[in-house]
Image 1 (cartoon, rainbow, N blue to C red):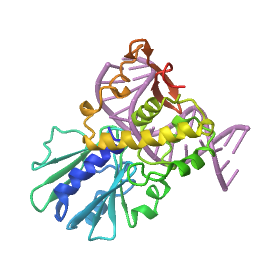
Image 2 (image 1 turned 120 degrees about the horizontal axis):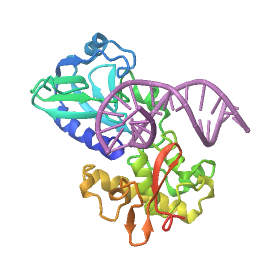
Image 3 (image 1 turned 60 degrees about the vertical axis):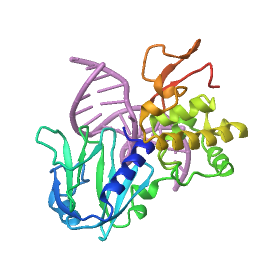
Image 4 (image 1 turned 180 degrees about the horizontal axis):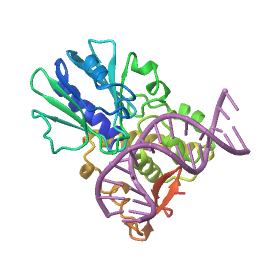
Length: 265
DNA sequence: CTCAGTGTTCAGTG
DNA sequence: TCACTGAACACTGA
């Protein structure tokens, strides 16, 4: 479930629970894919005994600031998730990849059944791939309307593809892109460079408001406004957003895209 | 049994 | 070199 709002919500919870505490013990699954080729021993050596100062986020990545040179960077992929608890995960819990036991008994468990998530150990996370390739974070570094116009006029791809491109803006994923375009009244197929100044202004405003509101409610989708496409997009066959306004589904930019042709031009 | 999926990277093309 | 597209990755559940 990880787009910017989910990841930012995790970040806040993790920072609150881990800040100022020391990693007392570390359990690492022998999974070279998740740990980008690193051995359990290497991961453990770099985490054990470290004191967590902060948890940072850019786009869909988070990393810990610690009293160590090498820092852990997390990306949740499609199905990664964290559990904060005071109990060790029991054996029945599948796909646990990392367990951090903190000095005060707090336990952070990371699991990822599909294994698209990654945990990197890096020196200056922002200076190296994959973080170095990210465009401005849409919550903390959203470009001005003017800058956004300049960026979009250079792009010939469908606006949906540009919103999903993490090197242009970071943090937007599939449902957010559809939500932003729906609320902006823009058809996802439109080429980015074809947007009028008024449309770019609208898009800018909706990137900001969709991001802020979903973070504000802690990425709890039940709390998203009733008017959002989000609540209707999953009913595949001929869903309606309101009387007469049909939701269409189609692959755009390689991803399933939901939009309402009667409202998005 | 087949296929799609809240994501990213890389090979191939123009 | 750049921008863009589509496939691959790994696994679960509809």
